Image (cartoon, rainbow, N blue to C red; front, side, top):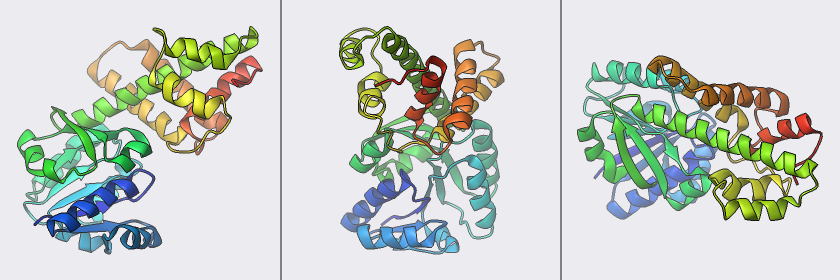
Length: 294
C-alpha cells in the first residue's frame, strides 16, 4: 500500500491532493499533505481525509508530489529535506518549473537514490477538481510506469522525454496560450473600435478558423463579462512565457512571436497586476486602444 505526500496546496494542489486522498482511502494507503500555511493543510485533512504532517514527515512517503510556484521553492524543499529522503523514493514535481532546474534536481536526487520526474499539468482548476488533468512528464519512463497508478488527478499522462522535457513542453504550451489570448484580444479590440457587437463576433470566431481555447473558454466568460476570476495568475503566465523564451534560446531556435509574447506578458503583469487573472492581460490592450473588450 503506497504512501503519497503532497507539498503545496494552492489553487491547483488542493484539489489534486484530494484525488490522492480519495484513492488512498479506497486502497488502504495514506495520503500526507504539507503546506507552508499550516491551516491550509489542516483544512485539507478535514475536508478530504488526508493526513497533515510537518515537513520532515513528508520523507516517509513512497511518492512525493510537489506543486509550488517556481523551481526555487522546490529547491528550498529539497534542501530542507536533504537528510530525510529515503532511497527508493520518487519525487514527482508538478510545478511549472524550469527545465534546467529539473536536470539539476534530478541529478542531485539520484545521488541519494531518489528518482525525480518533472510532471507539470494542464487543465486548470476545473481539470484539477475533475481529475482530468493532462500531465506531461520528463524523466525515466520506467520510473513513470511505477508511479503512474498514483497520478489520481490525471486524465492523460504523456512521457515527453528526458529530465526537463516536461517543464519545456509546459512552458511552450503556456506561451501558446498567451499568444492566442493576446491575438484574440487585439482582434476584438479592433472590432470594438469599429462598432461591432463583440458577443456576435465571438460566436462567429468560435465557429470558424480563428477559434482557440482562449476565444472558446476564456474571453466570453471572463473578459466580456468583466469578471476576471483569478484561477491562474498573470504573473505566473509571465513567468512561464519567460521559461519558454529560455527554452528557445537554449535550443538556438528562432521564435520571434514567442519572444514577443514574453515581453507582452511581463508588461501586462507589471501594468495590470501580477496577481490578477491571466485573462486580465487584455486590459493592457484596452489601454492601447482606449476601448473595453465587452
